[in-house]
Amino acid sequence: MYEDGEVVLKRILELVETVPEPLRAKCFEVLLRGYAESQGGGGHKKDQGALHKKDKQGADEKITPPKESDIPATALPRFKAAAKRLTVPIEKLEALFDFSVDPFALQPVVVPGKNTAEKNRQVALLAAARSYFAGGPWSADWQEVKKLCVDHNCYDRANHTVNLKTGVGSIFKNVEAGKPVELSTEGITQAEKLLKSLIEADE
Image 1 (tube, helix red, strand yellow):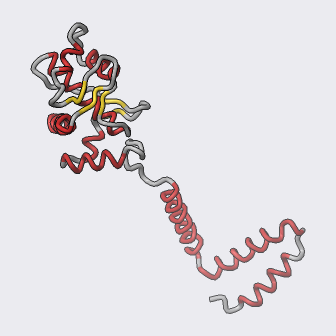
Image 2 (image 1 turned 90 degrees about the vertical axis):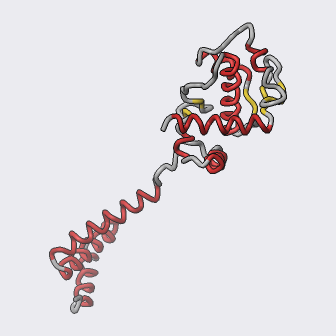
Image 3 (image 1 turned 30 degrees about the vertical axis):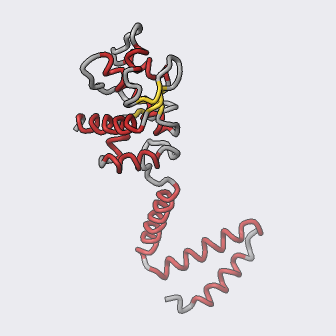
């Protein structure tokens, strides 16, 4: 292979000199490729094309790696840690939230509870969990709790604050109308248990 390479290369250079300067580089490339392909046989060009295609695909894959999840990068460590604590697949935990909105929200779920008051407290636990995953503390925004209670048909305007206050000292550190509802250590435990129960109920 390439036995007469030196002679051919010299001839190619001579031919290149006969074309205008701006075209010389391209001319040299075309002539040299033509010679290389003639030496490599009919299948050489095809193989080269396939290899080039494969390399291009590989490059594209590196540029656009597969997306791990829809969870924002800043929240992903907390989701991974919680999934490990709860011994549930992170995909199942991710499915409880809607990441198509910013900030991300809770997906519609069936909130457990024997009565409106109990459901109010469960909603507050879920809102606090969402706040934690988003990067905030384990505390539920008052307006978010109210909206979720309305969405889950468990909002009792006259007794909303009272219903939540029954959780003070056990799952809540404090409850004051219009202010965030902060979870106690037990409240955090109960919030994570609630998340796990919702995941298991969906299986």
